[in-house]
Image (cartoon, rainbow, N blue to C red; front, side, top):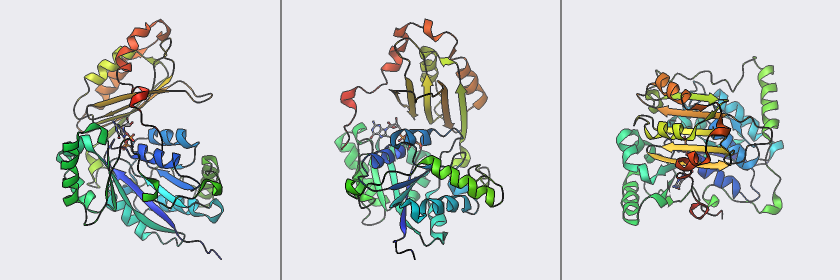
Length: 369
Ligand SMILES: Nc1nc2c(ncn2[C@@H]2O[C@H](COP(=O)(O)OP(=O)(O)OP(=O)(O)O)[C@@H](O)[C@H]2O)c(=O)[nH]1
């Protein structure tokens, strides 16, 4: 008999680029001995979020790319993964679902409420809000207010990007938009107290995180046994007709084995159209002295690069996901192709200066708790 309590499933939502992956990585890094099951839902088919989370914790999650979970017709794709994560053998304490930045939170909650698996229970919705983009996001998407009204906890993230008066103004606005008594927690780089989401176990009880390979192997096996369909293939999404926020957005992917020229790429970023709201991914410049993998994030006009090591044996690829509304996808791809550089070793290192202006210096980077 299973005497365990149902495992809470927490939904982490928030508009494109608000900081969901940053919050999730912070929780994973500060989980103590708690075992967290993670479901990451990327909008694009290149799973940048999944890669960013995996890099943080050593591949301990399930990734559902290629569309918003909220459009899954019957929720069975999600149910199958939750069932897998909730199996007693994994001894998971809490499951966190990072929704895509364009997901409809209410739909996700409905799907979880309808789940009849006694091993899990809905554990609440955390909405991440970008303080610097608060007004712009609400203007662009009036649905934001409706999403806030159903949140159980609001994380007002990127407080480092607004001054005290602006923060007070946003907190007051959130106070009226959120349900009565809903906590609004300010955060810089997603650093919230993990206890807000789950009871942290002491490190002495640590049993390690679940391996991604374990999950995939078992999921593939179950899919074979069922009807031969792959639960990770994103089937069932109907972005055109669902009427959700993401129906107005398109996602474009760019992959290049050739390096990108730093100046040409930065020019591309400087000229990016206003409708191209989000860019994320990894860039290979290959310029002498700058051979690292550069993670890039653009959120509205905000731009950051973060250099880091390539994984062992990892192919040096540029992989970008561009998400926008009313953008000309083929033209953007042509512009990116023109950024390719066949001889990066011959590119002078000072060509990187423009990129380096957007790298946070160590003093800017918050220390972990
Ligand atoms: N200045 C500042 N930047 C932040 C903060 N939190 C996150 N960022 C940066 O914002 C960018 C987007 O953060 P993510 O965590 O990837 O956002 P997300 O909500 O997961 O993005 P999507 O999955 O595309 O919706 C990254 O460059 C982060 O480093 C913060 O508190 N302050």
